[in-house]
Length: 187
Image (cartoon, rainbow, N blue to C red; front, side, top):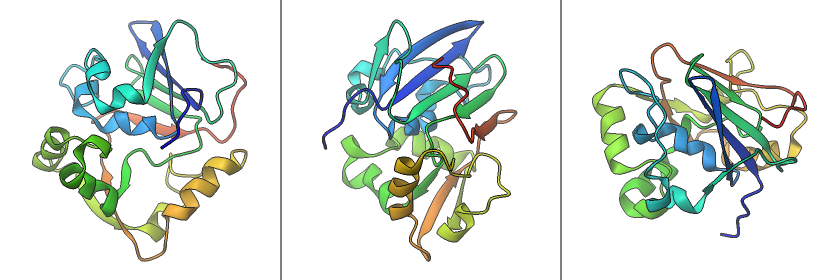
């Protein structure tokens, strides 16, 4: 897989401070990893493990945000409990079952670790849905921004009608929002 680390700004806000990572277009699946801290009783970000994981190949800590990331940004605000997706991907918490199967078949390439998946299943955070349900425009955070055709074309390939997906519930009290257009602010 040829990837460049200029696809997405991952911005994490905690106690008023912002930290930045440069990532590839699919790096948003890191949000489903329990080690990130979203599902902790007192949510606090932790990316200390990133360099020793397969995600380490997809994210790199940077001092300032990328000026023109190809797909935009993902902001995880631990203070406000908001996830703002300006990447256009819009499916971080929905996984095709074949992608989910990678957790056991090819764990180094899987978007969810075995430990995280077990935690999500034990906590009842996973439900099955049909692909056609993903396109419902009434669902906050799941609308593809019209201004990001590259991301829309990428995702459209993955949404064959009749396919089944696993939807991971957001942590209690968190809000996920897919921004329709970039506000021009890098971070």
